Amino acid sequence: MTSNLEFAKRLKKVMDYYQLSAAAFADRIDVQRSSISHLLSGRNRPSLDFVLKVLEEFKTVELYWLLNGKGTFPKNKETLPDIFSDDAKTTIPLSSVTSDKIDRIIIFYKNGTFKQYSPESNKKS
Image 1 (cartoon, rainbow, N blue to C red):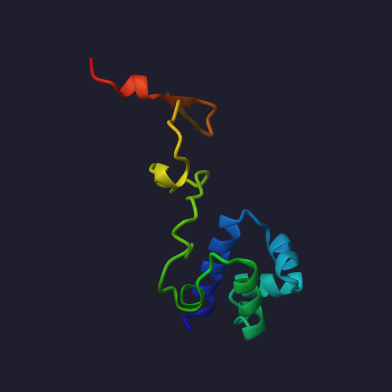
Image 2: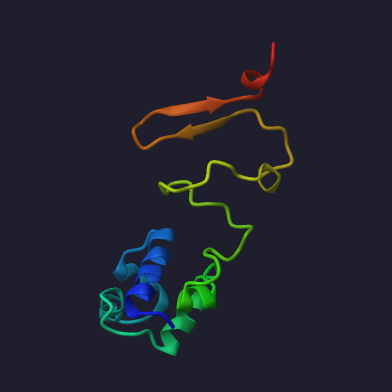
């Protein structure tokens, strides 16, 4: 396993992905809140029990990625991207969303603006 701080970065990434505070994360996997604090600070290494609880509760976490930083997160390629993160990809495979015809797509930005896309706006005259 890599260093404690590298593990802490990956653990923080999981918490951010699920939008959980350290306390909420601890509650979800049924560990003491201080355990999360010690792991995030790099003070402690995770126990096998801790790692197994994370993997059981969060199915998108890959063991090898969590321990060594190799692999992918989230592991399930069917999972849609977190569209609220700053590094979200701008494309979503529409075939996985619906088989109906799309009327329009609206993207809302954090600054309160939005963009609307519809099939009519993409047609060539």
